[in-house]
Image (cartoon, rainbow, N blue to C red):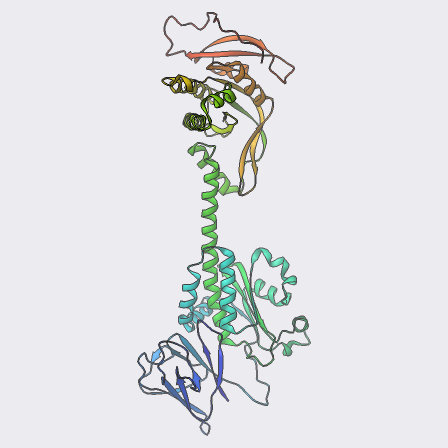
Length: 511
């Protein structure tokens, strides 16, 4: 006997047996073959079955939008053949045969390798349904929603009881997913669609035994491919013995949707990558100059992570506001907040302009120079930044005497453990070691409004800047004393009467 399977983008497939004589087709309630589509007429077409000649004929009933057989609009009558496809609006009607009393042959059992021809054939047969599928999937921006929507579309269009889309990184968990592992592996390894209309045929085989454990009657498994790469696996099955088995049309539709699923997965991955890049760039630019941020982002995209803690030589700068607690009390919270915000903003500009990395520390800033290899002369860039910070503070102090404040800038060069720590959502740059501690203590020696250097820093910039030795000092928390220096000014721009060698009246006490 003949049957007609009606598929719509919105609902499950419906199977209608073809009776002898006239079979009405349309949107009219009570039609022999009901077509639920706004483009269908109430009395759209009729199919006549002649059991003597075993012949079916379809006739369009002057419908507004027409009846199409194998993509051709019929003008009058047309004889139908097995596997013909009828389209009315967005509904696809597929003609096939079923047998009563005799076990049907299942020629479509087995694997069907993904080829260009199979994909084109599948897309051609289901173009209308795919239009709706693509329209729904193209609005989805995240992977989880995309996979859920693909599974829902497949389950609905196939009339399956279960459908899942499994990404490649979960293939090792196939056994726990409630689907025969052997079928899934066959689809993955052979890059093929696997169709098993009736599991009973394979009852004596391992795959059949595995399926029977899950009470699976009919199964369909399709890989989601991008070239030869398997992005995911789509599997579905039916357990109801009375449900129509998966057939060739189901396989073609599954292949067509899997192609759309591959495009969707690639698009959502690209969106996720772009969001990840933007998020990482946003995090990096919180404490890096744009050049440094772009450099590290490029490294992150290439290797998948930011540089971890490692030993390296850097120059560390600390600039801290003296007596910030009493200053806050004197100014009040709002005014002090504005002053501090301006100080942070302007010092950040200075440090970024000289390719430094910045961290806000209490009521001051810490900057690191030489963390990457894209910029040289870390010591000189740190000194220039320190002098410009002093000029900034002096400029901020002009005008409102009440808001006047002083800072000290300490700079030290040496070995540290430096790198990025944190999670995907939050990244912080950490720099640890004695060099950092010394730099912090030096800024206490540098008040009011001076730049003080450690010995390694001054050894590099001595021929470029006027410096004055302060002498050996013992900084708090450190047993050994160190020789420290004050930076006066740029040697090339210093006045002729300034030698940098004369004594200064200011004394430097022990911190």
